[in-house]
Amino acid sequence: MIVPTAFWEYQETGSAEALAKLHEQIKADPYFTERAPWYPRATDLLRDERYDEVIDLIENLMPGVFFCPEAHSMLGYAYAQLNDHERSDIHRTWADLAVAAIQSSGKGTRSWPWRVLRIIDEYALLRERGMKPVSQERIEQDGRIFDTHIAADDDLHGFDFGNQCWFELV
Image (cartoon, rainbow, N blue to C red; front, side, top):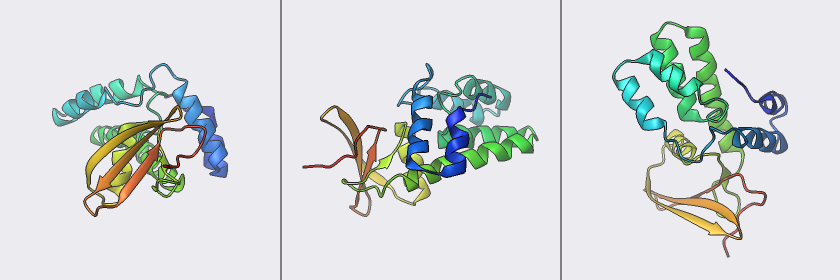
């Protein structure tokens, strides 16, 4: 599997600058998309216990889906089902690191949103935090793209798609 070189710097420093470089490397890959068109197919393959096919599907999209919590979780599960516990542990660790990176990138507020690469990453973080979104709105402002979610607790949670500047609603 191809691991973006910026991942190692991010792992070493944990800095916002290193995370931004990692995001840029991932976004430069031709298989990168903010959407996850592979996710329904991977879900069906997992349900059908076709673990080799799940692995082939997702691994062939790397590094475009690297640091996607859902992709690494699915790979971790598929490898575990095939008794490849070393690879399973690696992907589960990457899934946890990806969620932690999102968590540490902001506060989920309008003025300091969490930074994500993909829409599916938003839901991974909300689920990890035990939040249940009831509505979502995509906002474009000054050439930047943001998602806001209203959770069941009526709190607003904001996500930034790796824009150059932090989002502030006026």
